[in-house]
Length: 200
Image (tube, one colour):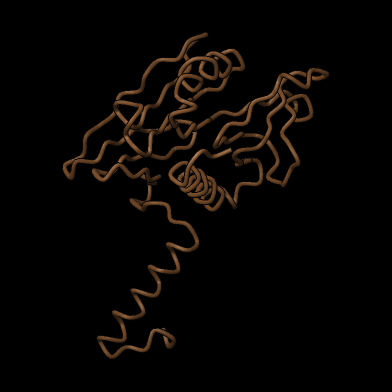
């Protein structure tokens, strides 16, 4: 459960843009804040990642994600939105559990900048351990890290905001609401130029 608006907003953003991005790929499952059970018959063997992506799992709604019902598929990508109450668990227990389960990429993001430095961290599984990913600082001050699992960049804007960026298209992923706002701005600009956007 999200501790603050900061956590909830980025959790919602990440799940929505990743679902939109992968909507044409029926074997990519995106979810967040959902119980993930990893041992059959052990109700205590459960975790609820803030955001996760499973490659090779059917894209459909589930009441929970049970690894044994999914052919043993664990998430390939997990993102935890860190807060005061989760920072030690995110960097300790969950990190160890995700490595044990074989989660290929584990990401942590701190929306307030109070608990992680840098505020965005990506870890890649090599053997049984996670190793930090190298980031690139872009000319505009953004920090960019590449997810091999998603084939997307996770970017930390100078303002501290997290954004997903598609390097293949050069486009930053937008929510439905952000896309609608963008379309409204474009339509207003066309009207300023005496072009009716409804005729295009």
